[in-house]
Length: 199
Image (tube, rainbow, N blue to C red; front, side, top):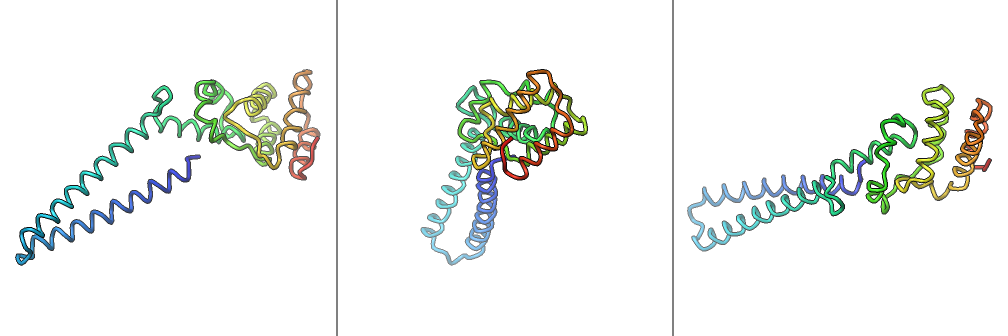
């Protein structure tokens, strides 16, 4: 998902641009139509309009540069936003392991240090349901477990960290022994996560 604070800022900026455009349009029409306005006052208003337009252009230019270029490796912000959306979908396996695994690299993890994606109990339950219906296979599921456990892009919900960790670790332990996760085990994992208890 995209950063909500950033979205709110962009929406607010849009409204301010619209209000500014309406205000300056009305003001300029008033000055043009009113022949009694003193030349000095007219000049002051025209200077203010020019300064406001210049400020708007500079602000837009800075915003474009900031949005399309980051300090690290010059990766455009839209690409980071796209990655974040993809990684958000991946935490509940709404996109395939193949689509995402090659994008979770050390270089890209840097962009998520300060704002990692939070993995909730419901996300793990959804992923388990996909394993149950065989939308993902056991091999893909263990890759998913490893990525959400060890990648800096993801953090378990701090309030449920032990519970989520216990389920993920138990799954990995079984799969490391080449044991298949059975339907009964999936049921026990889902119950543990729903009841907020550890395995």
